Image 1 (cartoon, rainbow, N blue to C red):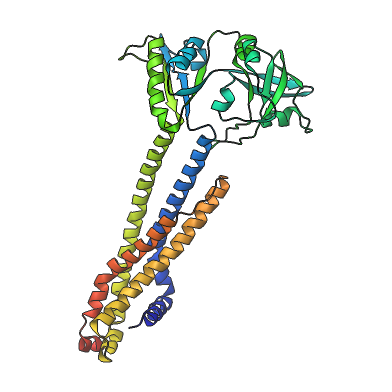
Image 2: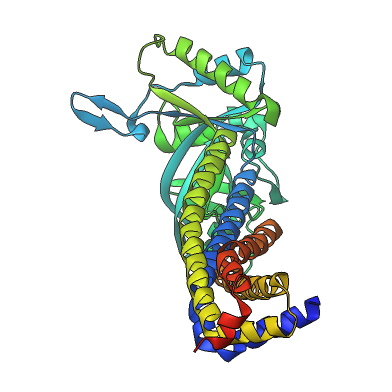
Length: 406
């Protein structure tokens, strides 16, 4: 029998029982749409998160304090005074796979310009801080080594801060603002970076020399954090090991002792993200596979019913010269058509749902062609596999017995 005739017969059979066909396809639709939805959301969110991380620099390494239990009280990292400038210098001199490093201190207070004020967070770093954090200057300039050494009262503002302090579009470069009680001159505007995946605003930032924040604002002799950049993405793991060893020596931490610091990298965070997404996707796809199996069983059941209902038709076709293989192909094709139609609806539903969700989350939509192709293959396989036994039963019917069937 020609393919064209098989398609016509299969399609006509589906249209004769639209409701039954739709209910039968429901399991396939749910399963396939779930697979497409999960794969699309997983890939799109992974790419989105990686782009967010890449905005901070994939070579980034962060050395921070670890919360400690002091006499039964957990001490917050902001109150710990164990990290010093000598740690920065030791890493700078001894770590061969570190290209840039900066001490970091953070201060929070109201920043005021004229009648406008804003609850600002001032990040203090050295001249390498902007390069390490992947920040660029849109207007003006960054601070110099001399300004860093003299704790100059200069700063650079992010766009969110500028929008509040200078709502009329005034150029902030050269203007004097007040951070707490300290007057500071704006020397630069930081280029916009937008928000990250959790909604944190990269542009809600004020950057100044770490000496200015440390001495003039906070009056402390320690630092809150260290940011460094590995020489390349390939040397990140080696750089992490170097930094960890140096910090253990500087803080006199024994090999089996509890460190008062932790060293992390964005590359390690991305690797962990890939692992988490792979496990989550495998779990969700497994659930979707169960739905597909249930849908396949539904197809098998309905094909058995169809064969029973069309017994006389089968006998008539056999009496007119149809061979066993013709009957087998017809019912196999009907089963595959039923499964593929449900698969197409499921793919479209999955893509529409993922596009809607990603649009609401303000994330880029990515169509996984592999997932679509695999979904088609799975649907065809389910249709043939679960339709085989009913089709074989139909092909094995005795023509005379079939014609006498009531």
